[in-house]
Length: 88
Image 1 (tube, helix red, strand yellow):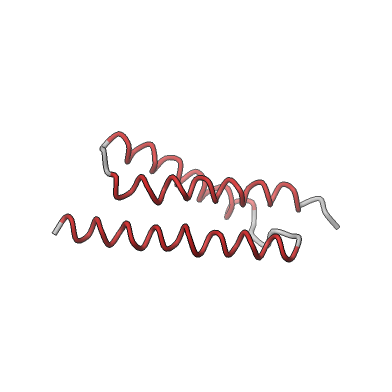
Image 2 (cartoon, helix red, strand yellow):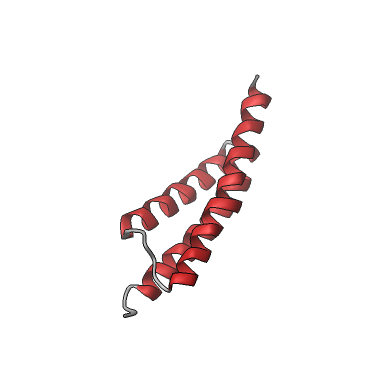
């Protein structure tokens, strides 16, 4: 049962970080603005960083893989937010 839920978590989390986050990044790039609030950019980054560290400590590789990708894509969203916030 643990492997079933671990696999399900891995599949859903990877789907989110390889489909949802990149689609938001592309949307921001096309529109030349970040439609998310600062907290909606910063909080997921914090969650991904803390979960990645925790998953490494408990050796939960089901969580490390998608959360590491989440850190990368969330950092890109933060960079877009900071870059586009002062653009007219």
